[in-house]
Length: 139
Length: 300
Image (cartoon, rainbow over all chains, first blue to last red):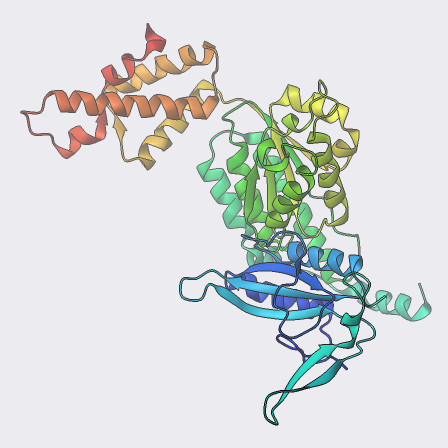
């Protein structure tokens, strides 16, 4: 199951030129670019691992693109995303975030039902990939 | 080359490109004229900058008619004594390269050793890479580049910075242009001990010292920009001051002149302040008198 998180996730994977154009757009808005990766695709997992420091004061996408390339090379079978952070007062948040690399095989989620008090049922999802311990998923 | 591409290339042999339209389109002439107008002296430097601009323009014309020559190496080294205009020319160079489309953004990132070299193991590489990323799409200007290499300390992290720099200079030639600057003699020893760096730099430009008349001219331009003017006696004092200052230690060409003028402004302000019961005219506020310059310790 192809996971859909962040911007553009319903589109086919972006090409390098498209990623570069998106980064360039973000830089022109004055946003700071950062690259992150993870092996836990749960939608509520906001805190991915940082790939190096966020990049401030860039003018051209080539610099950030080289980080994206090295991150994908180092983790070819994990999720890698690009974030663009807007530091403007009032926003102070990520304005754009999109996945640039994903594992070849995405096993999807198991739906778990829990019986609650009365006849309530609580639903939760769990990624099949996270059955293995951290660092040993998607091998 | 296959027959088809060969035929295609042959078809284009009649094509012509008008170099002067290309020149006007790029608006590079304006920058060159500005360079001529605003920078005094530096004749060999201006000639080299013009040469490089011509080369880049021809390279663009070649591309238009379908000739591939690979992008030319544009890394440069600027050598010369302090205050000879290396940073200023680097800024103009960034503009020229931008107008000709050789760098995408045309900004100048000026750094020294401190910005590139870290303080402990593992600190240098991220630091250097961060600066390189900032400079992408523009020009990276490394002032006093010879400090990067410290032969007396074999564990110095400067070498690491040089290696990263070399790699990017070679592999990402389209993304940024590196300009190394520093004093001529120390740069020469620096290049001698780093042959890899020297061979990757296509343009070595030497900045000559200014002649006394040129310095006088520079002083005039600086004063004009600051909206001051010299009185008759101040002109004479300046003419005497320049050769005297040139023989003193730590003479830094245009920079020394700027400092001298700043100190003269200070004394002028003091002089005007001392006569505070008198009204000062616009003329008084603009004029630097001979005594303002003659109070300098150079005359002592």
